[in-house]
Image 1 (cartoon, rainbow, N blue to C red):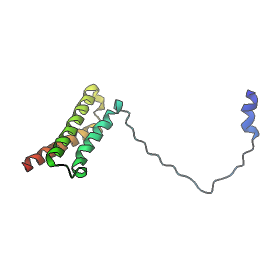
Image 2 (image 1 turned 120 degrees about the vertical axis):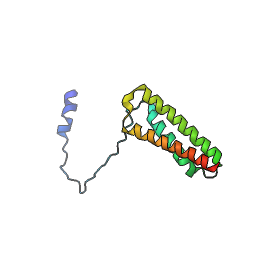
Image 3 (image 1 turned 180 degrees about the vertical axis):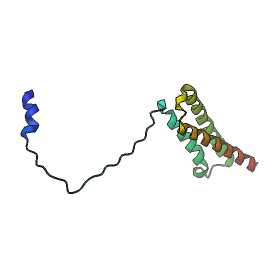
Length: 117
């Protein structure tokens, strides 16, 4: 039985045809495996949420929006510091850029709060 199955592809004639068109398949690869448990994605989503909140929640009053932005930034900063303390090899260029983005977003939120009071 095994010899019959192994010889089966040799026994079936397959015509040699060329396709009239070529399919070029590009692929997109997103690697997030360096930081375990999806913590890097959590930091990124919290940072993006804090940055997009003033544009998405326009009907929300300024104090609540500012408070929610600071909560998002604080939670993301805690997760980011946890990741950095677990293994310092995670401190690649992406983490450094996220840390700089968090600092700038925090300063912008605080400065915006000072300007409105």
